[in-house]
Length: 76
Image 1 (cartoon, rainbow, N blue to C red):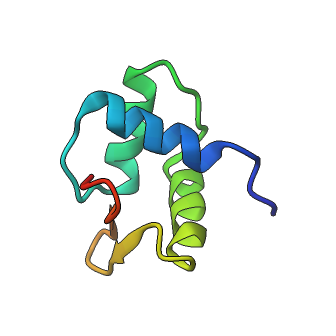
Image 2 (tube, one colour):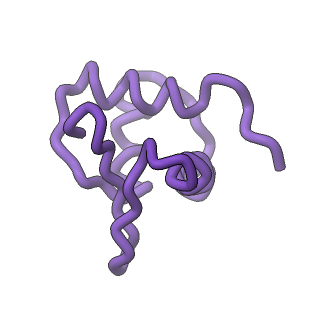
């Protein structure tokens, strides 16, 4: 399944606007998105988008239970 344009940017924008410190679980990120009226569908979708961006180094995946996601470039 292809990542729709802008999904990562929407996540990053909400985290920046919330001035939230990470790392976060996909569920925590989904909750923040919902609080900012951004419909993202599911925590699984959040994890998919962030997992793909981890391949390019834009996101760090902390392999714990549950996985957590850190944004090294902007401190989130």
